[in-house]
Length: 115
Length: 114
Image (cartoon, rainbow over all chains, first blue to last red; front, top):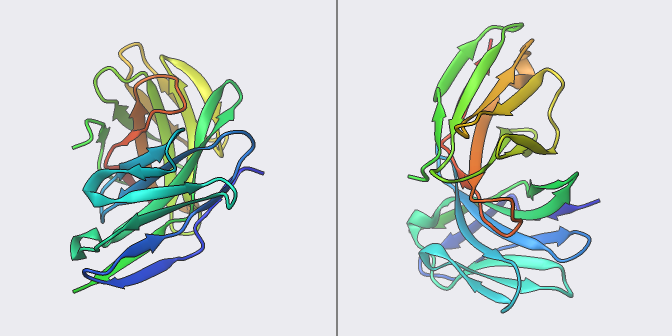
């Protein structure tokens, strides 16, 4: 079955330290991978995507993600965390579905950045 | 602001009732998606429309239905509501029918069934 896993419900990091939010996926064929962020009482906001090409993808707000085909992972990273990065992060994979496609989201990882 | 507009923002209704949620996609976007977000189920894909036609279906209950109109706005109809239908319902849109385009989400409609 096609799926996305975010193994950590919560990640805690101190401001200024690097952060990593983990994501692994299981799909048939080439994966289309996305990261979204959700702030309280808001919709999801697109951060970055991997379709093809360089394994390191750069996105909004200083975030980047590394695609690793052998490990089927797409971890989100940032070199220096900010308190304002505290939010709920979703990894997602897009798969074909009966003539169209659908996006499967992970369960989400809550990031807390402490000042 | 994502450019995707959802109305209403909040809705409180009783069990057994029917409600309609509305979504206006970003200007020019042909694809509309509906998602349900609840604490126990996470973010679940419900259905996708592309230029008025249903494209993909996810975990959508038979009591729920959706449509996309010629002006590309979409409505999600929820009927015979149950307490468990209480959730945040998101609409998202993307430019076309391509798998590699990201979706832009509205701020959601919070449905409370009492």
